[in-house]
Length: 329
Image (cartoon, rainbow, N blue to C red; front, side):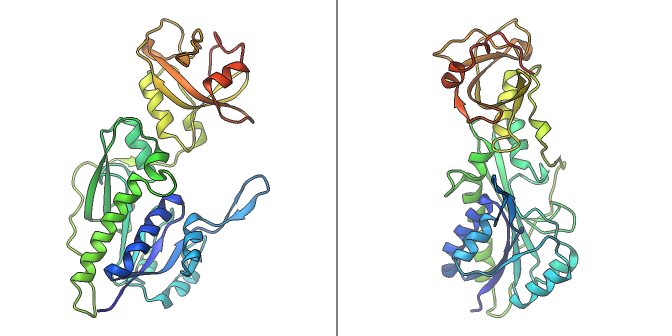
């Protein structure tokens, strides 16, 4: 039986975790990653060194050809075509596939998307689910369509949420596995195995897919300013925002004229009549309590001043004697 040939498109750590799982399963299940499409190296760190994506690094470790393009124009198509890949798999690649590029693949493409489509179409579905306090996060495999996230559904699943998750924990996990990447790779392997098992030995076909149904909602790019804390909101809303915007863009406020990141926090049962943003009297056994809207109270446990390292609340208070009583924002 002929092996199903795959071009995998992705860039960040989460995408590399999915790729790692597929590489471990592919040989036994009749499919092979014959190339990787990823973003070009980007400047990082103090010295602005050009660093390849995590997907590129993993592919090179496994002797898989790597293709890095700023735009998927004729040059990209000419480089990819000789692979004769049957299908394109995409997760967190970050670029649009045009009709000429998709035409390179007889089976078209499959995209892994962490939401219950058509809910949370777009590039930030996981932060949106956390912001809205959802009890579960959908995971979908959709056929790649010319309009963003409007493809038919090949497979879907759900991840229960307990209200403690961050975007980082759901997507990147501990750097070796995560809820989204584990479930996404499982669904991809399931569909790819179906394609292989249904083959007549020479050709392949996608399993039957279902059109999306229901009301669509959309998510967009997150900007640094989105992380500015509005202390007039409730402590619960602010706490969800902190988790949703970890690791990026992170949540910040202003203290003494400079930026102060609130990295970890929880909602207190206490109530206050103080102005939102006021730092309440310090209780070392509790944490740093801050007044929020509707009299609710947020307890900050990890903070980071501009140009300084992140600190637990006790270490922070040791060097911030005038913090109590100040009004943030």
